[in-house]
Length: 515
Image (cartoon, rainbow, N blue to C red; front, top):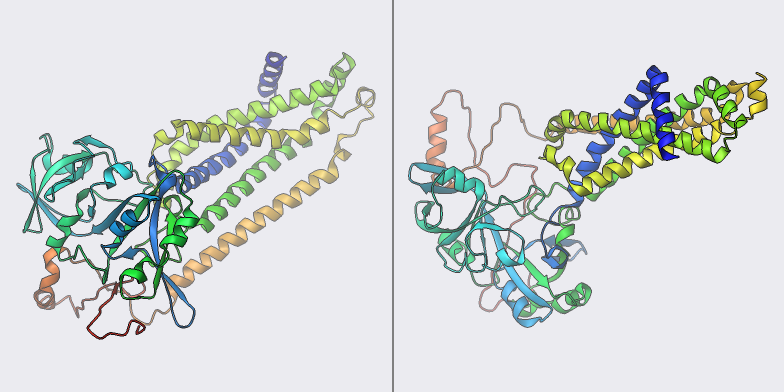
C-alpha cells in the first residue's frame, strides 16, 4: 500500500510540474529559514553541555544587598573561597578557581604575539571539565607551577611541525612556562574560552594575590556529588563569605553551568551575549514562518480541488474508501515536504556562511550531519508535511462521487470560508513579523542616532596590551606629535560599556558594619 501511495505521489508530481514546483519551492524556503533558526537555537541551548559533568558543575555567584534593597550580583570572589567550599562541605567534590587575563605577550623563538585567551586555574580543571588533551596527562599537566597547557591552534601557531611538549614559552618578558599538554580547541559554544592554561599559583607573577578575601577577581566553579541537592547546598554555603571575612555583607549561591549562557544578564559579569528571551523570540519567528509556508501549501492544494475532483470520484467508484484517500493525500504532502527538505538543505548550505556572519556564530556545514540535527530536521519536515496535508486530505476526500461525475459539483464554494480564514491568519502572522521587524529597525536606528553626550565621530579606541599600559604618558606624547591627532585620553573602559571591579579593604579598628 505504501509503495502504491509513493507511486501515485510521484505521478502527481510529474503530471502537475508547475503547481508542484511552486508548492515545493515555497515550502523549501520556509523550511530553510526554519532550519537556520533551529541551528542557532540548538547552539544557544547547547552551550557548555559538551562537558561530561555539565549537570553537576556550578558557578559561584556572589550577591550584595544595598541599603535601598537593590541586589547586586557578581561572578568573582577572592582566592580563598574555593578551598573553603571543598574542605568544609562534603557535597562539593571538587572546586576550581579560574581567571582569564588578556593581552599577555607570549614569545617562542622568533614568534611573538599578544594573546587574549591566557587563563590561570587549578590543576583539577582538566578532570572536572571536559577539555580533552591530545598530548599530556590531564591528571598531572598542571601540577608544576611553571607548566602550561596550550590549544591545538597555539601549538601550530608557535611550534608548527615541532613537538610542543617540553618547549619553553616566555610570557610578558619575565616568566617562563614549560608546555606540559596540548588540548583540543575549545568548542565555540563554551562560555570558558582560552588558548593558554597555566597553574593558578603562577598568577602571583602577574600582580595578583593567591590568598586573602579582599580582592574579588576569580570565578569559582564547584562539582557536586551525584546525590547532592543544589538547593540544600545553597542554604549551607550562603553565608560562608561573611563568616570568613569580618562580616562583609555578601552571600553566595550556585548557578548551573548550563544556565550561564542564557540566564546571566542580571549578573555583573564579563560580557555574555546570550539571552533566553532571544531564543524564545526567534523560536516563535521560526514557527510563524513555517506556518506561513504550510498555509500557502494548503491554499494552493485546495484551490486546485476542482481539477482533482473527477480523479477522486473515479477512485471512490472503484472502491476506494475515504481513509485510503486521506492516506494518499497525506502521502503526497509528505513526499513534497521531504523533497522540499532536500532543496532546503541546499539553501542552508549556501546561506550558512552569510548567516554565521550575521549572527556571530561559527556553525560548520558538517553540523547538518550530526544525529540530533538530522532528527530535528526530520521532525520539522514531518510536522510541516502533516500540517500542510491535513486539511487538503480531509477536504478532497470528502467529495461525493455522484455529484462529481454528474458535473453538479462546484469546487469553488467548498471550503471557501476556511480558505479565507487561512488567508486572514496568514496576513495577521505576516503583519506581526513586519511590525516586529520595523520596531527592531527603529530601535537600532535610535541607538545609532541618539545623542550620547559626546562625539563618537573620528574617535578611535584600542586596548593597550601588556607592558604598554605602563607607558601611557610616552604613548600620548608620541600620538600628540602627529598632526592628524587632535587629542588623546586614557580610560579603564569605553563609556557605555558595563564593567564591574570590586576590591575590599580593611584596617585595624574597622567596624564590620561599615560599608
